[in-house]
Image (tube, rainbow, N blue to C red; front, side, top):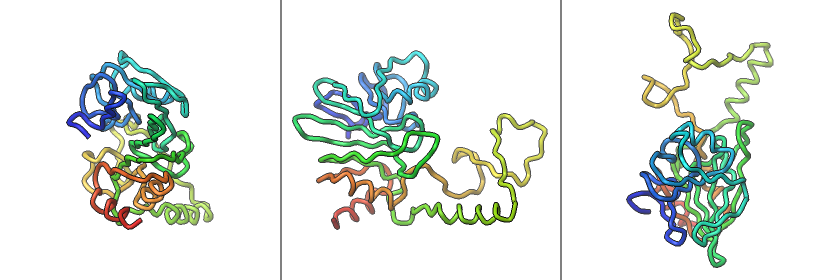
Amino acid sequence: MTSKGLYCPAGQFYIDPSRAVECAVITHAHSDHARKGSQLYYCVDSGVSLLKTRIGNNISVSPHAYSEIFEINGVNVSFHPAGPILGSSQVRLELNGEVWGASGDYKREKDPTCEPFEVVTCDVFVTEATFGTPGFAWNHPSATAINDCYRAHGVPMAPTRCLSRVESDRVLTGELFIVPHGGYDHGFLMSDHADWNELVCMILETKAKKAFVQHRGKGALVKHLSLF
């Protein structure tokens, strides 16, 4: 980890750098992972349009298919599906028989809007930990069961509309809004990130001998992993 973000000295590139660099390997097009100003961006081919929409159409991009092995300054690199959004990837790095894996955000549950998650085995794994405490365990099946009860009684589920397409004079009292965190007064957590159980499961399934943890929740997750 450097002042510009996660750096691979052998390949002379950064993964999701926090500022402009010469060579940036991008896991996905969320704004905290894809930033303007780098000379060259590597990403998976299905994520190019999102990346350009996020940071500009005139950027220089080297697109690659999932599982395609390409070389950056002698390091073999490949992208593998991570789950949260279209084009989201884990990065696999191999040099002299040693394999490292680095994640941006990932989600293990199936999602029809993007490529399905894939476990990448490695010797060392660098993981995100946005929800890396036991209190963050998303219990999705309970919500699904409640919705199914309503459907069984013939109650149609509410449709969704983009707010920008709603008439400006329409009264919106009683509607549910899904908005960026700065745009609401009260709400509840809803995320496309892996929760605590999925983070732990993911790290164990990589079979990594060592793991590095990024983002929030580092203390709890590191302490928990030390038990294995």
